[in-house]
Image (cartoon, rainbow, N blue to C red; front, side, top):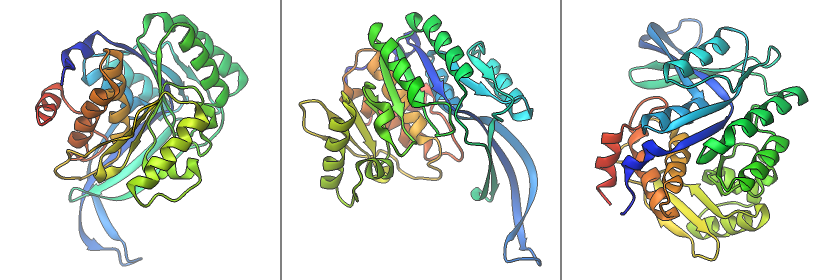
Length: 321
């Protein structure tokens, strides 16, 4: 593999997406509740991390890349935490707009004996208003000439609207900048003309309106999406079965998973799109970039919670190819 992982530190990425807070409540279980057949978790500690598009940012920063963030945050405790966490990573927050009517999504995970026993989501799915859209587009215009790639991290919370995607893609093409999108919305038409799309198998199945039960089905669904959304490249993640790559005028290519053990798949998609984007931005091929992304995903699923690989871990994992 000719890709040089050290080149990642020369890349500047613009991440546009739904910023969230991941809250972890860590404890232990030694009895069942007398009120209902559920475990009683005695909380011993709690921790907080950036989630959603924030996890993409964290993955990029862990690789030494420069990052600019664009999104919204509420005005409550979770929203303030977004700004604090970004500043702790050395990320400028001038691209984050506070919207009082859009509280920051907070996902609370209760973990006992190294297992997640409950998740509580506190969120409001609501599209950004026109005023916020105009402000975000202007920020993108101001920053786009200084970046090498754009990642649209869509968690379907209302920030990554069709209008925002279309205007971003139009600007990116003007400056010849890569655009990658991780989709969550059921209607993939809003991602039309992005450079690369990275759905998982379930998302691809729903978007292509067909059941996927074999690799042949993935090939069929992938071609449907390539044609319908006018993509240059498509990467479909298939969990323990790795990933399948689609590229214009080329046969689909299968990359097997390198994961030795799987504790938690949360955040793996964020790692995939981050490392794939960095690889492509350095000039590496789609296949090489996807192999690095696959190696990185194998690292993070072996950790509990949304995690990031370190550069040393990634170099060791890539060496297995």
